[in-house]
Length: 383
Image 1 (tube, rainbow, N blue to C red):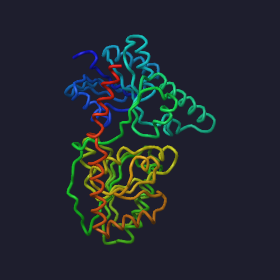
Image 2 (cartoon, one colour):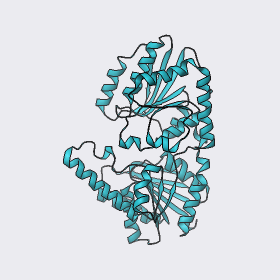
Image 3 (tube, rainbow, N blue to C red):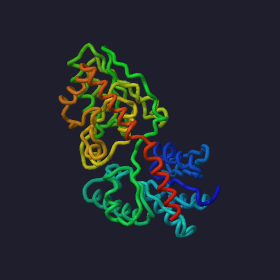
Image 4 (cartoon, rainbow, N blue to C red):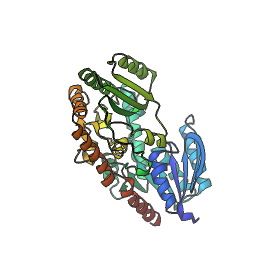
């Protein structure tokens, strides 16, 4: 394999088999003749899949300095011509490798997260929290400066870099799924059971309270219908787990809860479609409002209605939203009425289901942006 066809995904914030990195970007590059390596600091994991080699280690207990050294050592052994980075630390490692070993290597920053985000400063308060947020913001700005070019997952997260580094190459590659991964289920309605699916993180901030309160209202209005809530998610803390247990103990008896831990990507894609509607009622704050939810596009690919918090990022990306409802997450009565519409009006339910699948097949699928991604990488490497 020619040296100029070798690419490394350097992951400091994502796992080896990340849906965007492994199952979409790396697979597509491999299919187009690139030799692909993935190195993650999140887990001990080794695998060779076709033309993709994964050599990851669990370095979460390492100091930042040792994480840098470990990443640079891997890059030195691999000698890539392009390094795709998922976080500022990865960009710094790639830059130091470039200065020391290979001035020709290109450094590409794939921006998919806010940095800093709430989780980076969640246990801090007051002035210390402010200072750390400022330091992390400066680090991210520096990472942009040290990058050769950018890939952006969504509009709002691209803005700081496109404004500060307007002269640098960039490409928007949204979170659209490859439909080959999504299992399709017959869209059958029952007069006695209605299935609802919630995925991600089980917490108040992500909207589990709003989901359960809304379902309780529907259950009281329709006592003869079983509302089966499928949850594929993890608890971030024991406190959230205890809070959830307390909530479900107060639900009407016709609300059944099935909780599964968050699944590996392929299992997740197989399981989520066995539902009648998707619910995501996360709190509206600056970060959530300006984050485009990846899983929304997977819900659409399943061909089911969705009821989502009225996020600015969704309205920026998707119009018309004719396959469900965008709502204020705290307006439980309104959310319950929307759910009840699907219980009563089968024509509306099937119309929104068809609209969801049509939107996914005609607009929001990986096949439509894969060539943009591959062309950008090929042209970038040639520069």
